Amino acid sequence: MKKMITRRNFLKVSGVAAAAAALMLNACGSGAASTAAGTSSAGSTAVSAEGIGFPANTTITLAVPGKAGGGSDLGIRYYSEGLNRLYGLKTTVTNYDSNTVGHQTVANAKPDGTTLTVATSALNIQYITGNATVNPMTDFTLIACLQDNGFSTLAVPANAPYDDFQGFVDYAKAHPNELNAGMPAAGANTFLFGKLCSVLGIELNKVECASESDRLTNLAGGFIDIGVVGLGNAQEYEKAGKLKVIGTVAGDGITIDQYPAELPDNYKTLQEQGFKDCYMLVYHYLMGPAGMDETMVKQMNAAMEEIVNDPTVHDGIAGIGHIPGWHDLEESEELHQKEYDELVSIAKNLDMYVQG
Image (cartoon, rainbow, N blue to C red):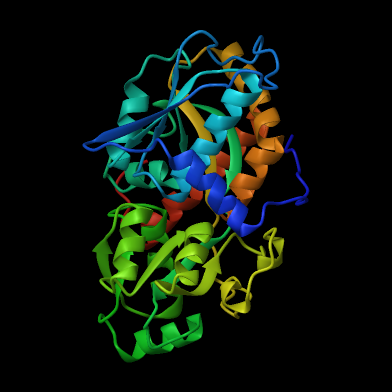
């Protein structure tokens, strides 16, 4: 069953930013992948690691299918820290510049629990659209659904000639194919913008910005006209005057007052702004290679409930705009299949369907 978590005692935005910065201190390196290690500290309050499924006597690699600094990267780092602190495990976080390479690395690893990732709909979308060969339904072991994407922020350059989403839509309709939207070649944001264009009757130029850090840089520089970024990063960049927020996208019926900290009106969801069909839900799943031991997977799923419930992890995940929520194995599998089927439907409507 799903573990419902009340939104209490959340970190303020500044506290979340500080915590995120601490998690990022070791996230350096260049090339295809960069690695940051973490270990439990002496005198920590780690509980017994027996029966949790995770390998206790070796390093666990948590692969990030994207560059350091994005929402997925920060989320994985909170889970890594929780595994270190609560269970005394040794983990290392490795970033891959390419989603495809990151996912392929996990799929090709030994199914012994030492190589894992937290995957989003990007894994499904890349396969469905023919941009990856790894099949999310057969080449991975699903361990747990941990959170949904919560609030994805629509950001525009600070000097954009519109201050809200209605203004953006009006401008886009008056200037078809003039505005550049930053997005991956194939990912959740690609599907989101495809859906928005279809629902709203607007035309945008697609500019490839594979990672959130790429989109933040290009928004601040005025090289793209709109992009989706994490809520925490959006607040930081908006405060610095580098961009402005014109709305958020969340699941059907989710409102911005479900975010733990009070936010100004420009952060209201597109549904709250009157665009009832403009929503999208993206789940985050802990996954490993196909063929993992069934007992190990059940134990790992149960162990992640403790991690998600931990106040530091929970508040950190919420602070980057996501909604924490542990699901047992059966419900995780149901959610994963439902999301996959919905993405296949969207891909067909966008004429992007290739396989699956």
